[in-house]
Length: 275
Length: 74
Image (cartoon, rainbow over all chains, first blue to last red):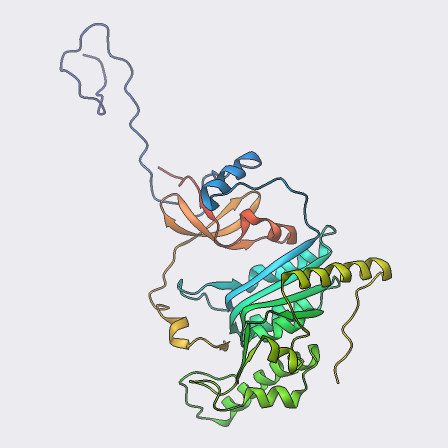
């Protein structure tokens, strides 16, 4: 008898000559995952990432010259301090804000195009994104496609120049806590303060007046479940909330001229103060 | 947290109580990421933990990207 038992392959009790080969190692059973020491990632660098791209997106990355602008897409809910359930499409501020820092820092990027199709979301996260966009030293342009509602409004006006497509809508409505009864005056005052932050940001970054914006916010009879106003493309321009009606072509054209201005003058053209 | 959205709050927050994702931290292309495990050896990037702003421009590190990894230990 040989001195071991092969527990993987069935063996006859009396082995024939020559003696059996060393036992086949049983396949390693995957043990419990240890989060502290994960194995190496199987996404390889370089050429392999093309393969990963092909597997995940169904397309290869084409070797093209790098663009000098960065496109940022704000979609779905603007996600703030709470992870939203998976049925929501979200734009995560913890990723967007460092990305904006990278846009500011990266010498290859000369301009930023923000495309909005959002239903709104967290007030603090939205205002933080808006303030970061407004603070960039590179030319920025925004384009509202589909919808730029609620907290999407300050993000849209944060750019140096804003465009809206003809069919896109923007809903302006008061801040509220759905279904909650305001039991103490402090709750109302707090909400009012939050609302003032939004109003002040929007009116100081666009040409709409505070009075007009408040009026639109508290209009009754426009929305089925709420008070407020829906502005369709042209209306948003009429009230001077958005600068111009246009599409991707107009936005890119504006951005290129903004980049040319910046190159010539050493700093970007600032929006003239409203009122 | 105050949500300022046109979506009804019940639609946005539906299923919040059932949300119990399992997160792992690992290194991908030299940057640390938080991954939500979707199945054994596969996960989705939830967050990028990096102090290098340029990492946030890397499409391979964007939230939502699928990552295959070899579960360690045996």
